[in-house]
Image 1 (cartoon, rainbow, N blue to C red):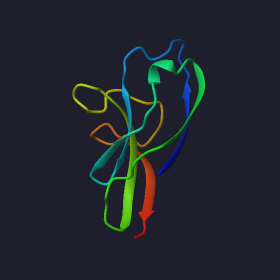
Image 2: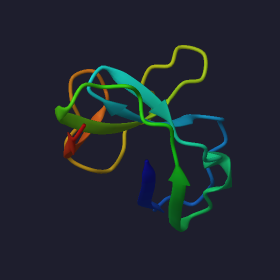
Image 3: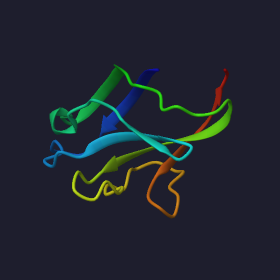
Image 4: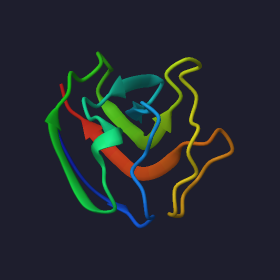
Length: 98
C-alpha cells in the first residue's frame, strides 16, 4: 500500500529517540519505514510502500502514532486534533475491496 504523509517539525530540534512511525488499520498495526531522528525542524514528506495486513473487505479507521520501540505504545503528543484515549490520532476511513 503506498503511503504519503506530510509532517512538520515546528520545534527547534530533531527528534532524538528512535520512535516508530506506525499506522493502525482496524486491529492491525503497520510500521512505516522512516527514521524520525532525521526529521529536522521544518517540513518532511514520507513516501513509502508498506505491506497491508490481511483484512476482510470493509471500511476501517486509519490512525497514526509515534510508538515507543520498547512498549509499542503511542508516546508522542502531536500538535494536531483527533487524539484518541489510547494515544493514536484518527486520520479517516479507508475502504478495502476484495
